[in-house]
Image 1 (cartoon, helix red, strand yellow):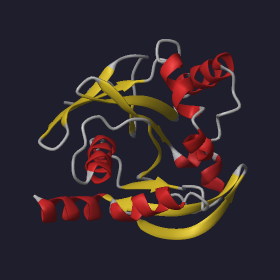
Image 2 (cartoon, rainbow, N blue to C red):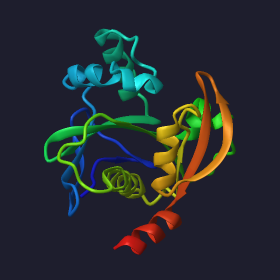
Image 3 (cartoon, rainbow, N blue to C red):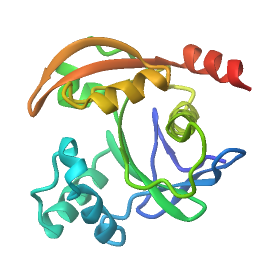
Image 4 (cartoon, rainbow, N blue to C red):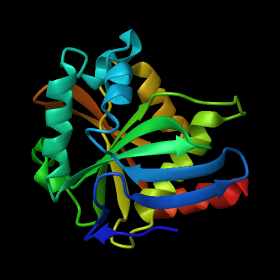
Length: 202
């Protein structure tokens, strides 16, 4: 079930439940629009972990972090979500229109592109291939909008775990791109490729 949509990307008011999936592997997955106030303590705990250095928000105070996501919440081109597994928050997810982001100056944007940032904050009960299942469900969420033909990510080239996770999730690596705050590794997942790999494991 997906609801409350805005153009190419799913959107909605803070706290709104916009997507539900009952996954055989992970259980009930719920995706809600991030509440920059209500979810602030969780967000600040996640982004200030030593393992979160590539997210680039560790130096922000709680108030600065709140204001940042309130700003994102006010943009028509950028959206933030919290993914819960059986009620446990596990992922901070951001989607955006690449043509309305600095990334759009670094590569040739196609009309059906959707940018994605993905931060794994928790896991819950261990399951085999956890990261693959989560990535697949997030792709399902983004591709629930028929206007989206391709997901684009640009992990920091130094974040080898994120790059490796992208490859395991079916993304095809592209060139390096210079962004205002990092050197990123472009990677792409087309709708066709995602549907093909999903059919192969079903």
